[in-house]
Amino acid sequence: MTDALGPNDGSGGSVDGRPLGLWAAAGVLHGGYGRRAGGRLISAIQLLTPSWRVEQPHAVATLVASDPLSLLTWSLLTLLATSATSIVVADVLLGSILAVAVIPVLLFVVVTAASGLGQRVNARKTAGRRRRALVVANVAADPKRQGHGTALMATIANFADAIGRDLVLLVDPTNDPAVRLYRSCGFVADDVIHHRRTRMVRPASFGAPVRAALPSWLVP
Image 1 (spheres, one colour):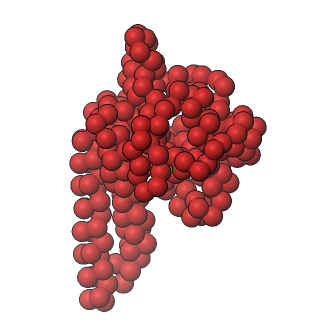
Image 2 (cartoon, rainbow, N blue to C red):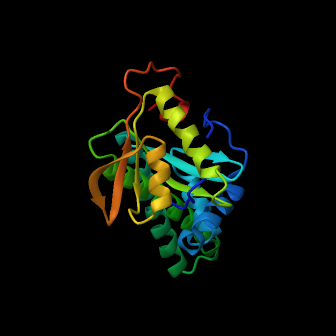
């Protein structure tokens, strides 16, 4: 999800701060997308597992790095969680009462791990050959049309320029307000279509010096 924004939804700066917290950020995501977000708990899981969550008081987005190490890590986590759940289910069938109590926890771990893996897989598909790009997703502002989305995207763009990284995202081409917003931040369509969505790319400012060290979540 990358386009739950209104037409006037700038400021720049670091993406390190998290003024909302996970549950409040999930409320913003759910408010921005409505039923498409699938519930606030689902929104929270989506925001829990990206490389980084970018928050402002009324806007939220996620960044996912398209690196093979992260993909491998989440693949192993998903495999281990699924295997553990299968073992516990077998114990339940054999009559273990303790195993019954553990199942809800393991199911949550499986869903969370699968969410993280899915985001990495989608990021690699979205980034294409731009392996060092950061993939922007889950962009939402609530309330809309008050400049919150614009300020959020300006912050993300300034951050990407500071560390010399391209940005990539998918957008519904029929969502004119979102397309206009992304274009105003320097994104251009590259004619690649993913499930009826257009990929937009924002190259890091050409020739601009890298001004900041990589954050810890981008260091393998």
